Length: 347
Image (tube, rainbow, N blue to C red; front, top):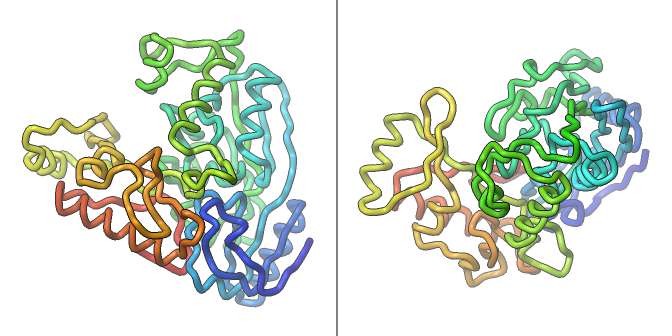
């Protein structure tokens, strides 16, 4: 376990933003993670847990407490059962599963930055796939009970970009994640995302070559600035900054009434609701790729990514986010919700 006082946090996030932590603890084993959490809880110390820092917006004042950086390692594959330590690099794990072992289930989640332990918290998803489809168990430290527990898929309460862990952030610290993968003889899971299906000229629901699916997703993500590149400021982001709105039937009818001749993307969601595209709303409200003249702008490759052009502060980023949120609401009556976790700030 390594402890640093007054430690910079910006370098630990993909946005490269945020003030310092009063105390930074780097834990490399599950035992060190648990010990650090117990020490902070016993002292009544505010605790922030981070992994890859890809889904964090930290305030310019930093964090007046203990930041626990989970740097555990562990990749264990038994047949089609995969167990990842929380600190494992997610993109590297997906690459290994697909290219070295030929297993399907997470191939459309290629290139997503961050750690494995963060994936169940956000129910990470992309291109028609989400981790809730393959996670079988999550091993976590329950701060309320003071013990390590194993939660089955149903107990995780997964929903769109949400989970039990996100709903109760001060209770759970993810230690390990287990996945049930599949061997389709070199083929992918069924293609669910229209853009990927179009790329291969197949119908949604068909399978494609597994490696080719992984490569295609990487190329699509890179084209949108969603694959980390130190030299490319379009990747200095937290990925998609806003979730796709999910509207009740009443909200959707009100939304349709404001569209006029426009035709917005619409997808069926749970409980009779309808999901639409945050990126489409942002673009149609007048916020085009690259929008902004300050040190924080929209990505030049994707309207859902708010980026640090190298000199931004968190205050700069939030000012842009508020402008976009207000503009979309004024145009369409839809309230955008942030996807990243905010620390010490709010919209």
